[in-house]
Image (tube, rainbow, N blue to C red; front, side, top):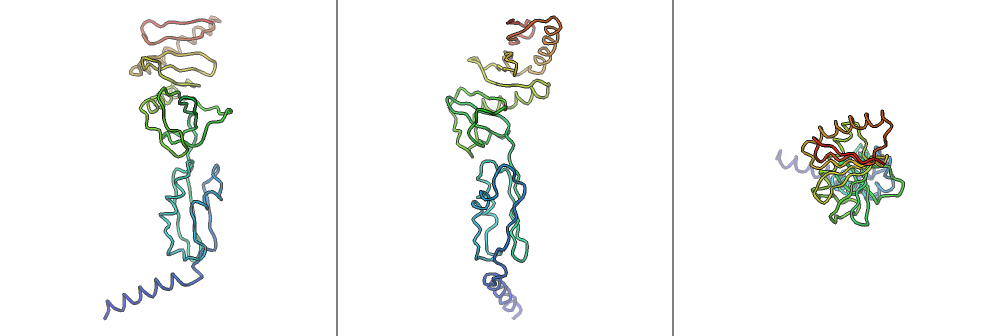
Length: 227
């Protein structure tokens, strides 16, 4: 009898949640978005206006919203009696990736956010292999991950890269915003080479010399190319 009564009460609660119009969504709040328009998020959420919030799948809503390239994380919560709260965290543009004739903006996880524009000031990562640059896709190329790591090392050494690529021997080549090229070769001893870059640049600036390139592929015998 007790089990039957509990089952009836649960069934009555489900029926009430499904049919009581006071539980139909009356308000939807969206927060955390700056780049992505609220209407785009609501379109992906696909909230049914005449279905109780208790019967709508908030997990499915979150998964649909997460397909927007700039969205990194989503939570969708029900707020009784008739509100849905959507919170998002957006991805941050980190670099521009170029593959052949195509170019796209990516975040640190190498998710493609959007096609690159001519006005971007992000560091450029040049790949010599074809990759899919459709918004929402992740780049899995080994070279891309290596160049992201190299960019982090340069930034930590207070060197701002404008472009990073690998030469035909898979050695790291970095172009600075001034146009100076750093031929760094293997990344195995990158911290030592970056320390040498600082030392060489400080000497050339003191002497008024303008350097076009620094070859540190053999760090024990650096080669300077002057303008």
